[in-house]
Length: 90
Image (cartoon, rainbow, N blue to C red; front, side, top):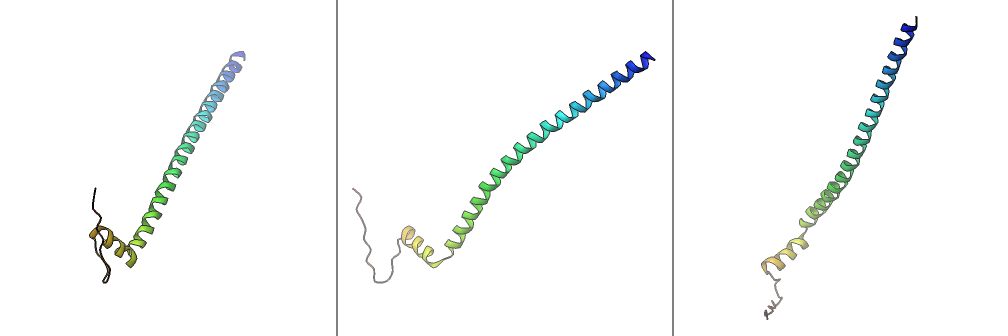
């Protein structure tokens, strides 16, 4: 009879140790997943801001004023009736 109770106590102890191991392992996994989720959220915010910026730039680039500005700055175009001024480099 003593032997049965001893085996029963050892079995219960092993089960409790195993359950504790599983719970601790799950907590560690959950913490790692939370950290990973926060990292992804920060990255998503960064990419979303960049996407919004590119959408705005696309909208602006389709306007006449923007095209005119680029033509003046990069290609040196002038409007009819304007005088071009060229600065000498020292």
